[in-house]
Amino acid sequence: MENGFSDGNRAPPQPHVALLATPGIGHIIPLAEFAKILVARYGFSVTIITLAASACEAQSALLSSLPPAISSLALPPVPLDDLSPDARIETIMSVAVVRSLPDLRRALSQLQSSVNLVALAADLFATDSFTVARELGLPPYLFFPTNLLALSLILHIPELDATVVGEYRDLPELRLPGCVPIPGPDILNPIQDRSNEVYRWMVHHGRRYREADGIIVNTFDALEPEAAKVLRQPEPGRPPVYLVGPLTAEGSKDAECLRWLDQQPQDSVLFVSFGSGGTLSMAQTTELALGLEMSGQRFLWVVRSPTDCGDVSEAYFTAQSKADPFAFLPEGFADRMREVGLLVTSWVPQVALLNHAATGGFLSHCGWNSTLETVKAGVPIIAWPLFAEQRQNAVMLTKGAKIALRRRAEANGLVPREEVARVVRGLMEGDEGKAARRRVRDLREAAARGLEEGGDAYRAIEEVAIKWKGTN
Image (cartoon, rainbow, N blue to C red; front, side):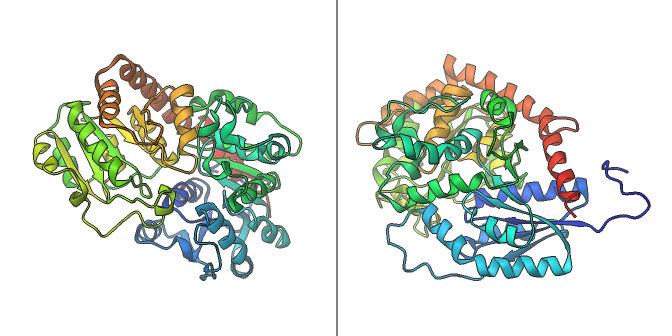
């Protein structure tokens, strides 16, 4: 048969998988891409389950664009107003999952009564759903939307919790098997304060990861070769790991900014964007603007209204401010930059923009979706991490993969305009930038080969599909 599956003379009932996403468009995009492959290549049907806290226009648009064999189901809202006002994003997500378990149980039971439900795959903060899956006789899988460095760290957190004295930020560096060493201050943000409730949640998830029947990871071998080698080796008490990436959305190819890029020389434009949930302070917005001006380089900047809330991660669900972002730029900046820069607000077709011939670099927050999109486009990066796992992503991209340059901040965290200009010129014109460009284009080719029939990612997805088809 076409997909290599056969059961004699009678076709088995169509296998159905439930995919549980926690809030954040960066979580749901790779899940949706994975679902599309299961449907198109292996004949599955899929239900993507979301939490009420994740509802937004971008998510609704994405879910409504999926093939008919992929349906979506939103669990009802749960009370979260009793949480501390300063509760971290990861805490809110984890609590929302726990309080949604009765609704999840009902949803999965209803699916079982109507379709051939063969597995539940939940993303990184939804591990408590494993309990419901086991109760219903479903194999629970973890869908991990980021990289092996982050996965390795979370898998080791219970052990580190028992052996590390003091705060992780005070360590000279942390070494994990097969991974680039991480300086203490760059270690995963949610574990930097051991007195915070979010730390206990991360330890909890680290333990529960090992209860999964398998861990599906949105990365690929060539990007993290040593970590891949380590995690591919069987280890007692650790589920098998499947590298299925890079899974990224195609996105739109029609926007005014693309027509502007058509008028620019090849590899001449720096794309500046901090993702769907990233914002800067007022002072940093000013320094970035004046640094771009000092660099003398062409740029396309997705400008957002600044936030001075202290912790930029607090803007995760509210980054799309209604205030006019241009009102916060230095006086006269927009007029002075009219010939060399394009300023846009909110949405741009990022994938198409990164793949445009004029785009020669990406100043990025190092969110994993954006990182994979730029690797697939063969564009080098200026690493400007903000929160979550982005700081250790920046370490991996600069010291491990060597496809990024990293801006340096002052002691107060501010990146001055002179440093912005230095690193922008270095990426767009310097030898270090040229080396990063060569390296990322090699990775682009490796990523494409892995997703082709017979490639590493192709075979990893097929292995998971075969296991799920054999469940019932």
